[in-house]
Length: 196
Image 1: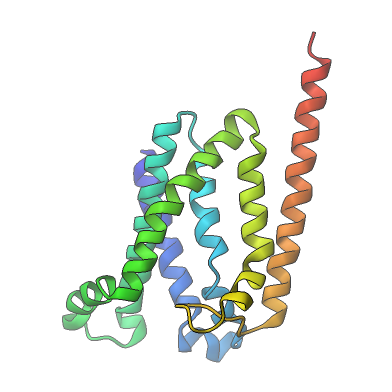
Image 2 (image 1 turned 45 degrees about the vertical axis):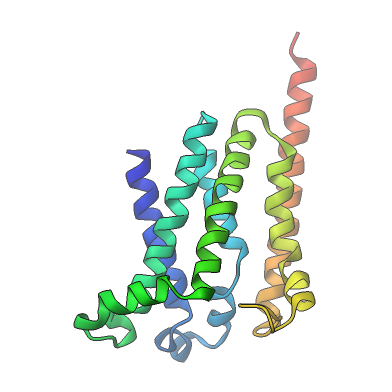
């Protein structure tokens, strides 16, 4: 059942992420949605959260792979759907072509590496309050704008273009996450000290 839930959530996440960057959404909500759609940190947090649902490490890693692959499938499918004015007859060939291009193969490979890692640390956060997972999530949020500005526009998806408010909000969310993670770690240590 957990794998089915991971597939559904992954598909919905990927489709929603792609839809946020579509012309239809930007024409109604503004161009800031393209910036949100282009963020990488949510794609790392998704498997972390999926891993948090699991008590066993191997299962968490597997869930991380499944949720990321489903998210990518949802993204590619939405990109080539009627929502993007693609004729139904072109859906499958365009989706396969999109998923097998060099740039997208890089994102797929990245997801197959980072998905299981973040899912594992989500599991470790759940079972042992491992600070490493908390740090990875916080750093992904706080440092993405800096990393994008350093890498520049020559890298696929690189450069710090788009809404500065969105990038600032991402850093602010990262700082809030750091405070929440730190508070939870302190509570756990305090509870351990009180246990006889």
